[in-house]
Image (cartoon, rainbow, N blue to C red; front, side):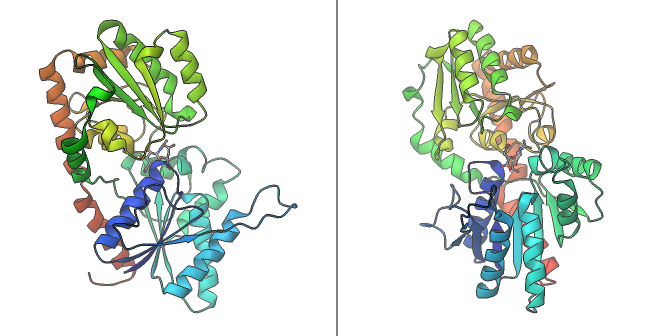
Length: 377
Ligand code: GMT
């Protein structure tokens, strides 16, 4: 099939899912075209046969805000017409589903019938999408997509609660290329570079936005550090980083906390991680937790949103109420109390990722595309 993928090209989970999906589809012989304002960070042209089309913006002094939807829908009309695309799969409703709908209408005038698949990722519904400034347009574009998917059951329920939805929403969980994590752990796991042999390694990876509650990450680590010898790796960049750095200083744990910035090689960081911390205020799925689990890491998270669909309480890690730092610290120590317990959690976490294997989820998307095109695979 000939598929256009629209996403944010940044380090966020929706962009990662879209990019990994596009690369996997290309590996299976589909023609895949990415349309976005920058080359997606995880896009690997060297080993995949893919196309990338940059959405260019025209600066004009009158514009306080650049009309990105206009440029995107214009680019989509151009790319769909030129490459005879059959499907536009847009990730993150704002503004992608709206721009795709506009492109669909413009293409209809040219006699081209493009099908639009919209995947809802989380904050496009729970934080931003339901804001009064966007709600009407988001609701309209969800209801006017040919197919709508959400990355968890929890996000589906949030969407039905927050909007008047007339369209069906299919739940397609996020996926993971488990082999990528196996390979990396076997070949290049250099634990000694970050911690002493007796130290446990805790890691947090995110965009450091308020929703991630990274001060809770620091507080959990601080409590754990009082009992056992450990290091904390903070991976990512974002608005709350400064606050976290100040808290680390105030608590006197600067020697044990390493801020690594954004990384293209999270497999190499996760391969030596013992416990992954994700105390988010809301998380539609928690792709970073799934990636950590694929790298044999136990998870300490809140029980918000779709996290219970990924992290199984008492099996792959523990779930706690939002802000309950004491409970999360206690659970972390319970996992780390002895090697046998830690290894049991790690094995369980890895085993649970089988449910989300790329080879199981990819055919679900292919079936969605073929049924909307009424094609037999
Ligand atoms: O978590 C973020 O702030 C980034 C955001 C995104 O759109 O890139 O992540 C959302 O989509 C991911 C991929 O489907 C999910 O794993 C994250 O849970 C979700 N984030 C939130 O719901 C806060």
